[in-house]
Amino acid sequence: MNKKILFSVQIILILVLTLTGCSKTEEVAVEEKVRAVKAEEIKESEMPVLLSYLGTVDSQDIVKYGFKTPGKLGRIFVNEGDEVKKGDKLAQLDIQDLQFQFNAAKSTLEAADLNVQKAKDAYEYAQSLLARVEKLYKKGSVTEDSYDKAKLQVSTTEHTYNQAQAQYQKAKTDYSYKKSLLEDATLYADQDGSVVKVPFEESELIPQGYPVVVVRSVQRVVNVGIAQKDLNKINIGMKAYVEVDGQKAEGIVTNIAEAPDAETRTYNAEVTVQGNVYKLGSIAKVDFDLGKEKAIWIPVTCLLSNGENYVYVVRNGRAFKTIVELERTYGDHIRVKGLKAGDMVVTSGMKNLSDGIKVKVIGREGV
Image (cartoon, rainbow, N blue to C red; front, side):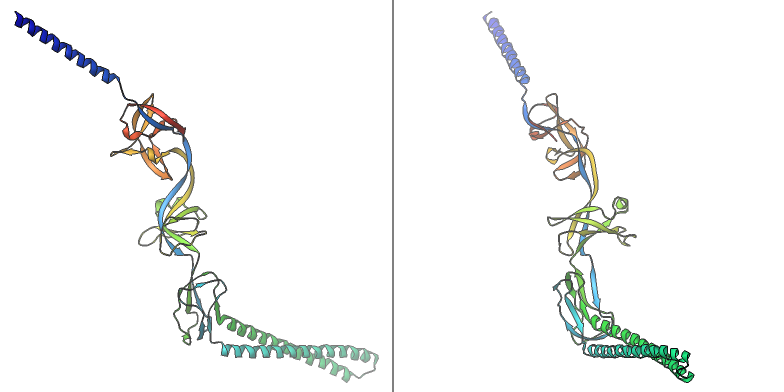
């Protein structure tokens, strides 16, 4: 009998302990932990629409300077690698013969000018004499022969005057030509730049028009190969943002090729860079400014990823995992699909969250 009572007491104790344990478990389950987070209310906002490409830095112009006439190279004033300014001397032909020809042409022109003045004076004198003789002839004071001689004198001096004028024009043309030869015998830079090539040495014979000095302009451009699908989005005059090794500058689209490159099948867009000189051949990131658009943008720091991109959105005191589709970034914000204006997105403390967990927002602001 005592054994039966003892056994019954043991069973009762086990049941009491079991019920007590269940009660504590239920109490723990009821005490749900609340996570503190910061959140921001999402709004539609305007951001620039940028079309990004990579390009190569090049010079806007490569100018090849050559002489208009052949001759012996007298002097070279620059070396390869030199920086030149607009108006600087680059090279000069041996001008000894040209100077002699110019001086001779100048003397001939001066003599022709003097002959014209003399012939003009003689012609005007003959005209005035004829006028006087004609009056006397009409009065009968001079013979017809004297009158005819006066007319002949006018005709002769007029012919001489016309010849002198023709000779003067010929001398003037020759003088202008010799002067241009002399002037063209010295090459001047017509813009700022750097010398990239000097193929001849002094005293060498230079063919007409052959490059003597090659100068690359200081103005930089970025050449970008544009895909056909984006060609209608880019226009001449459009603003672009250029970045090379962290150095940023603004540029303008100044030219778009009419035909695609034979190998890449892309259309070259030339972006002229303002206020910055990048090293030639550098790779540049180019963002073409297509305007602005309204959309949902969130801070990049809100995003989490475990094979899919998501954020936590707070609703009714709980954080819910929300999948988003990423579109493009601008600065520290990214445009997404899957959210709407008014959503409260967790911006801090989200790494300790799970879907549906209870949260307390301790920091809140609109974006």
